Amino acid sequence: MASPPFRTTLTRVLVIQVITLALLWLLQSRYAS
Amino acid sequence: MHWINWAIVGVYLVYVVGDGLRRARGTTNIEGYFLANRNLPWWAVGLSVMATQLSAITLIGTTGQGATDGLRFVQFYFGLPIAMVILGVTLVPFLHGAKIYTAYEFLERRFDAKTRSLTSLLFLLSRGMSCGTIVAAPAVVFSAIFGWDIVWSVALIGVPTVTYTVIGGVQAVTWADVKQMVVIVGALVAIVVVLLFRLPVPLDDALRIAGSAGRLRVFDFSFNLTETYTFWSGIIGGTFLMLSYFGTDQSQVQRYLTAKSVDQARSSLLMSAYWKIPLQALILLVGVLVFLFYHFQAPPLLYNPAHERQLRAADPGAYVALEERYRAAVTEREEFALATSSFRAQGRGPAVDEAALGAYRDREAAVTAIRGEALGAVERVTGQASRDVNFIMPRFVLDHLPLGMAGLFLAAVLAAAMSSIAAELNSLSTATVVDFYKRWARPTGTDAHYLKVSKLATACWGIFACVVATQAATLGSLIEVVNRFGSFFYGSILGVFILAMIGRAKPVGAFLGLIAGMGTVAAVSYFYPQVAFLWHNVIGAVTVVSVGMVLSLPRSPESPAAA
Image (cartoon, rainbow over all chains, first blue to last red; front, side, top):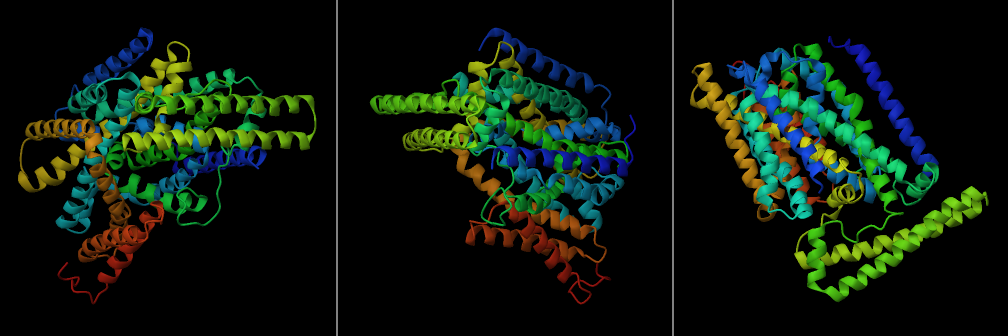
């Protein structure tokens, strides 16, 4: 299996981090305020 | 534990060791033994990188931390994706392209032999001892839970790991890591599902209870150098720590040196960037769900059964009284937790809901206070820190999970321990043979000879780690000193690698900069002990680069001609 191009991987990394942090933020603001 | 659970553990161990031995076939030279002939696919290397970082203490200690402290520890990993991206465009092409065996070898090519030897020696010192700690941490828990002598617990973890690492080399280590990651993630997901089904209140209400008890607070934006886990320490200190760990620590560098190409090495690192924060959040969330589970199921006063026995034996009357108070407080907490849910279901309004949560918080504080008394008593009686947090998850698994799942969890803990230990033994052996034996003792020799020496070195480091682990109780303070010492130079070594990528930096700057960096961190640690350890990496790296560049100025004692 060939590795995906670096820029594609980088974009995916950013998207996953943004989604994860947004979910954690939602969890905190809804339940831990 | 039921025999079916032990059978699952047995099948796992036989499979991992058997497959490791199978992978050993065809390894006839040290490039195959240490670097798999630089031919492994990126996804296998990526899983190996993640498995190496995820140790047994992550599974048992971090879940416990989630139960007692909530999700905020996840901030520690905020710098990881940033570090992976930086390494992908900077150090990885240098290291992979240099066709080296160890990261420190690169420093000799760029600077000189003494800088290489010093950094490699520091790696051997700190990793050698930390490998013992990685074996000891789960072994101590197994011994307390199953009542075994520590030697047997260490043997259960150490013997299969050392066997497949010695015989199979990096091929066995990497492919075992792949399977181990599958076991670990599978076990975690299965436990989350079981916990969700066991909650007697709707998930939304359960999360409100956890949030009310402070377990869902993730972000702390205060800029406080004395607070270990904040957004800023994670982003800044964490980035430097992860740059040091993934960019300069042989146990990690060796993983991606086995990849087929620079692109594949980058992609393997970025796999961690994808999944580390979600995985760590999942691990902490398991702890939060266990915390909630014990609201509706009687929790033990102490999760460590050995400490429970010791405390009971020391003063039976006082222990029974404390336990009775705890039972009463736990029952009351359960009633108030259920009330928060039933008031919401009845739609009594936000004011009533808030008042119910406030009342619940008081009961939760009472339970925590009584447990605090018990933990204090343990420390007085045993003369040691209680570390009860490491026993929350194992105790929950053994007491409450359905048949077979305890075996799966134990296999996952063993997998986490074995993957980290195997990678460390493999890298310790590589640094010993390549940076010292081949460099200084015997520069010329046949591949067969070096392969034999490499296997011998792996076995010796394995035995050393197991011996250190069996003596963990008596060596406790020594291990702590070594770990502390390790934190002095982690950021400093990163500084040397940064200098290596700056064209104007000279050998004298690198060597003296490294010493200045370690000295500065040691001084900060001594005079300002309140500064959280994540910042040590920043201080070390910045000092090395600053001192190194000043000493590399054209008028410095070592002229370009001399270099």
